Structure formats: structure tokens, C-alpha cells
Image (cartoon, rainbow, N blue to C red):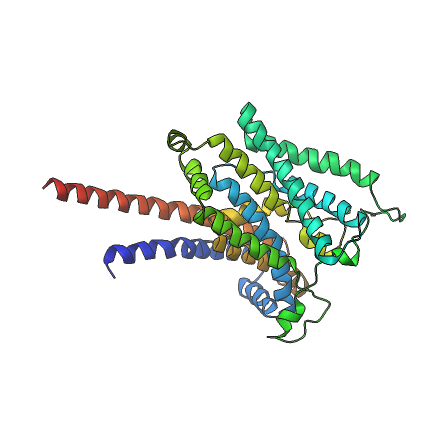
Length: 370
């Protein structure tokens, strides 16, 4: 293996290694300042993660984060900052819950209907921001932030009162989805290779949907013509437009696809856990998905690793609180530190790589001139 090849591999490994090292050091300092022992805290986190039930929790937490990360990454590939994943998945989950609770169909068709409604609503809400951008030049950051407020503080806040299940409960939500519209868990698949999963833990079947989303995202971005146009338009919209690529069409396509994938983020709650939408529906997954996409460099495998890391940290919060080794809020600090360290590390390595490429190009030019 040549020296340049070794250097390229070294630079590729350096970024995540540097990010991990910096994040570990900063997190340890924060733990010490807060009066906790970093060794004890890390030991509790990893010992907790070794349990089968905790592993199930990590996968359940990572599943919506992965889908959310892919939704954000689709926009990033077009140089679009889709802040609206939060509103898109909440609005999609609400209408999917209403549709799922209103019918009683054979299981496959019932689940398919819920997924179809979720993706359609998410695509429509994301596409609205795309239309504003291509027709009126409205920046997608501004429009998606406003659409988040409209979706969560307006439409859902109003409709959840109008369409709530008539049970008289204080936290009543939409009509629960019947058994035919619920995805079976994957416990039996896991127990073939491990032991029986206890404590009522259930591995969500939406994990299979997340895997399918990742595969389709990879094929679309890297193996299709429209994916090539998609990446080219995002990398250099002026050059791609000169080459005959319709940049407005690509923007609209990106927002529609991003919104459609975002619509699936809430399906763990809708199809596997609560089976309805209520006031306690899980929130914040859209914003965490942006962090996951950035940490994973918009790559399917990278996003998966980032989602698992965030899932591990989220699952560790309870263990730290119960063990008394640290406050559960330290997990949020760790997540922010990891993201910040990763962004800085990747930028440093990217600049080093650019210098290497410039040096190599200059050497080749000098050699050809002589």
C-alpha cells in the first residue's frame, strides 16, 4: 500500500477518533465539575448497555432517530436545511393515528394505510416549504420553522380536541388503533439467538421499516440517475443547471422525499407503543435527527451509528439517575459535546485533505511542465 493511500486512510480514521477523544475528555471534565466520578459513570453506562433489555431499549430509541436522520440528510444532500422534520412527523403521526383508529381492515392493509397516510401528510407538509422556495424564494429554514409552529401549536392543538377519543380522560387522545393496525414486535426473532426478553420489553417492528428506509436512501442517492442529479445540484446548482438539470425540480423533490421519510418518524409510537396520538406523544425527534444526520455525515451507515450512539446515551440517562453516579442531564451535555467535537474534527480533517489534494495537483503540474 502506497504512502498516499495510507495517509488517506489515516485521515478518514482521524476524524471520528479525534471527535471521540475530545468528547470523552470534555464529558469527563463536566462530570468532575458536577461532583461525579467519570469512571463510575462510564462503568454504569456500559454495564447497563450489556443487558438484553437495555439493548432492546437502545434499538427502540435509535429507530425513530435513524429515520429522522435520513429525512434531514435528504435535505442536506441538496444543501437544504430542513428544520421542519419535527412538525412534519408530528402532523403525519396525528393524521395517521386518526386514519388508523377510524377503520378496521385486514392487518397488512391496515398497517399499510397508516404508513401511507403518514408519508403522504409528511410529504405534503415538507413539499409546502419546497413550493414556497421555488416559487417565492422563501428560505427553507424560515418556512419550515414557521410550519413547525403551525403544525404543532395550531393544527394539532385544535384537531386533537375536535377528534379526541370520547373517554372522559384528562389526557385523552385520538381513537386507539385496533389490533389489526399494530405492527408485531420482533422479540421472537431476537430470542432465537439470545434468551427470553423480560420486563415487558418489546423490540419494535418499525425497525424493519427503518432498515428499508436506509437501503432505499442508499440506492436512491448512489445508484440512480435522479440521485446523481440530486447530488450534483446540491454540490453546485449553477453548474448542474447549465448541464440541463432543473434545480427547482430537485428542490421540490428533496422536500417531498424528506417530508415523506419524516412522516415515518412517529410510527414507533403509533404502530408499536401507544397506538394513538395524545398530548404526551414523544417530541423532539426531528431536532435530534438533524444532529444524527450531521454526526453521520449524511451517509446511511454513519447515520445508523450516530442513531445507535444517541440511543445508547438516552437509554443510559435512567441508569445514571438510579445508580446515583451522575445526573441524567449529563447525557444531553454528552450529546452536544459529541456533535460539536465531530463537526470540528471533520472540518479540520477536511482542510488537511484539501491541502493534500492541492499539494498533489501542484506536484503533478510541476512534473508535467518539466
